[in-house]
Amino acid sequence: MRRLTCASVTPALDVWNGYGSRDLLQEYRSRPPMWSSNPRGWIAQPANRADLIALAELRGFYVVLEEAEVVR
Image 1 (tube, rainbow, N blue to C red):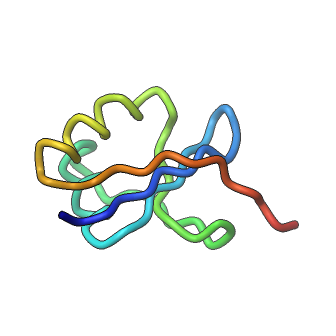
Image 2 (cartoon, one colour):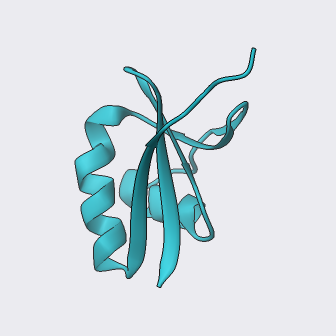
């Protein structure tokens, strides 16, 4: 089972990372996601979190939710 991490950075920003996360986000949104360099990962809106978690679990991912610490 592959691990996928969703970090809630702000109320308006989630960062997803893990092997296959880009393909999962692209499948959901039908376009490539944006890359964040700090924290490192693919950007998505929190409103899509429940749908992305459901899709990830359907595809065989183990989803981990965490709070991110942004280094400024």
